[in-house]
Amino acid sequence: VLAIGTYSDLDAEALRQDFGAEILPGLDDLAGLSGREAVAALAYKSGAALDGAVMDRLPGLKVIANFGVGYDAIDIPAATARGIQVTNTPDVLNDDVADLAVAMWIALARQMYPAENWLREGAWHQGRPLALARKASGRRVGILGLGRIGREIANRLAAFKCEIHYVSRQEKETPGWTYHADATSLAAAVDDLFVALVGGPDTEGAVSAEVILALGADGTLINIARGSVVDEEALLQALGNRLIRGAALDVFRDEPNIDRRFLALDNVLLLPHIGSATTETRAEMGALQRQNLRAVLDGQPALTPVNRV
Ligand code: 8YV
Image 1 (cartoon, rainbow, N blue to C red):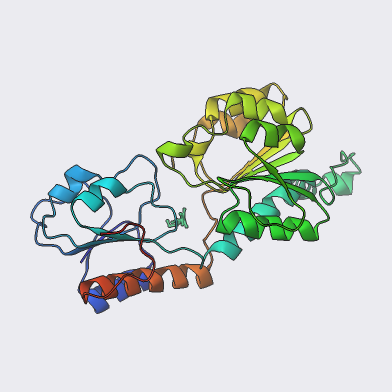
Image 2: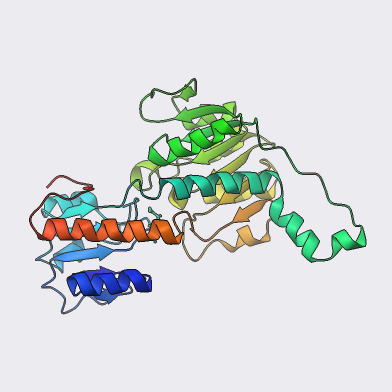
């Protein structure tokens, strides 16, 4: 097993112990590794880093087990064409990612980070004024992508007395939530838009300038999905010109080299892709990745397959 990525000590140890895995930080150094049967990938960047050319350098490859639910860094048709089973780690991270989305939404509305900075700077003690924030509960919210994570976000927002609107491939059975056929109509109907789409070519730029502007001057955007889904240039323009009120972003187009213009804005909340980053969830993700590896290497069906081979 070849394990690619920056694993926690715990996962690295388990991969070495259970599979005798060799761990490489990146894809640059695959020479001499052609005998590998399995890749344990920790790759969450869009752009199919694990493409057909990489797969061809590992001709014995049977399985690519991704550490993460999103597999946009893996060229799935290329894997299928080569008979390589791809697996991911769905569901175990739904709660964490949905929790973070809601936390970011409240933190942005209630201006929690600016208020904390104000306190830390001594402004409270000096009696300086602190601007009022905005109420979160009861706002109209849109979920772009009512998949497993999107639904968890919506369920949480329902408890915050929000009016819930959503876009998904088909209309779904929901408790009185409003379906929209496209992202622009969704954005126009809501105050706050949560992006919960998968990454990859099909959703590239789905949150376009038109969608962002449809949110309006009181609107906010919360993205816990993939940076590739959002037109970042349009978002930067809209934020800079106050055409929307703010954005809370856990994901970016070019991680970790995020567009530095975000750092100069005072109407954003920026986090370093920590949606699933809890001890509990990362342990479950690692365990599921290894169960998938074990199953396929033993000739059994994968637990959570992405493709059919
Ligand atoms: C990362 C994620 O995989 O599951 C996903 O799709 O984006 C994250 O959970 C995780 O950060 C590992 O790097």
